[in-house]
Image (cartoon, rainbow, N blue to C red; front, side):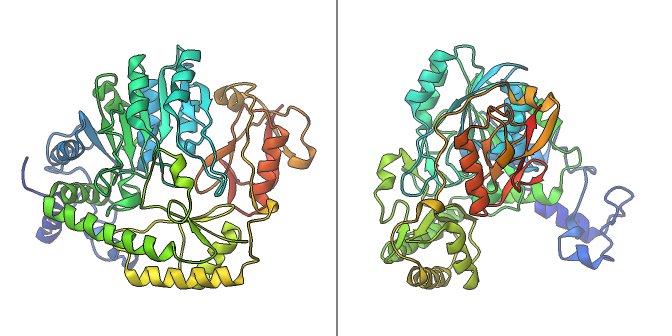
Amino acid sequence: MKDTKLDTMLRSVSAKGRVPFHMPGHKRSGRYDYLNGLGAAMDMTEIDGFDNLHDPTGILRDGMELLSRVYGSKRSFFLINGSTGGILAAVRCAVPFGGEVIMARNCHKAVYNAAELVGARPVYIDPPTDDTFGFCLDVSPYDVEKALEDHSAASAVIVTSPTYDGVVSDISAIAKVCHGRGVPLIVDEAHGAHLGFLDERVRGAVSSGADIVIQSFHKTLPSLTQTAVAHIGGDLVDAERYAAELSVFETSSPSYLLMSSLDGCTRLLADDGARDAFFGRWREVLGYGEGVLSSLLGVRLFGGNTVSAERIYGYDRAKWVISADGMTGVELAAVLRRHNIEPEMAAAGYVLLMPGADTEKGDIDLLCTALRDGACGARGGPLAEDGKIRPVTARKQAMTPHEARLREKETVALSELPTDAVSGDYVFAYPPGIPVVVPGEVITEEIKEALYGILRLDLNPATLRGAFRGHISVVK
């Protein structure tokens, strides 16, 4: 592999003043103040010597080959439209049109969109729910095996690990179950690019035997927003077919700023000294934070001063799920914002925080001050029932999401829904983007209560068309 770095090449072209009779339109002129602070001087297109993301033969190929060696994959890819593009390509690669796909019900909306695009018939696995915090726990290998026994024609299995809340499933065991039946395992590891580096006890999906793994570098590693990677492992997936599908879902004008970010982050992971320093700082941050947070009265840290973490296969230390007695997640988030702290997410009964290697101890001290303030001002005691959203335990699928999308629809208020109404749209709290109801599902009383819950608690309820305000699209 050449030693040349992509960012070095970009800076060199900018410094030499090569005359740009090519895209982009700003010509790296420095004339536009709104662009100058955004790195426009290094904003390049596929000029001579800069390779082509969709047919890499030079510096981009070198970067992706290094990425593959870092993670131990058969082949790896840079993605510049987030994990979403990698997920869409994965499902299209592994699932024939109209085929069955087994997927965990807590998958991100990108997985549902992908399944819909290929007209898939989804078979759902419902992970159990944590009683204290209310989020989904891990996917059981036994449940995957049972689903494959009942649906022997399934083309692929898709799980999310770690989840948005940090829950890690036993990917090694799930992969063995899938491979025993010749079925590829796709893992949405968008939140887990750091697994295996930060904590050796929690392995990543690539080293655990998954066939397609998609990771968002930008979520937990030092890389620009929107950057992600994909890895191919084993022989059940054709890497060339996956590359072809990526070319469908990724732009033909990829940002070199984003690709340079991916290249630089890959080189950090490949450099023993830089990698050890980065993850060493991160471990220090987590150790300090876990110690002080677990000592706060009236405050619960998942996996810290709770026993809930004993019920799951693994947990990502880099996710802090925190609740305060008597407060909803939205109320607790408001307390944090009063102290100039922005959480990652406010859920029904907790907030989600994402400390990183560059979080300072002073940031954690401020967090503790804010949490003490919240605990002192709280109503006290456990969260009232109206501050919780009960999990949906039974679902009825009247048609596939693809079929529902093609049907004529009308918009109806929740309060006026007829019995056995079939949803024509997704509704989810965003983040995390896990659908409460999916097109083609019957809107049962349980689902209606869950929808009322995300409205009542103001959890950013949304549909694919915009905000959800109590009216839902249903199939006529």
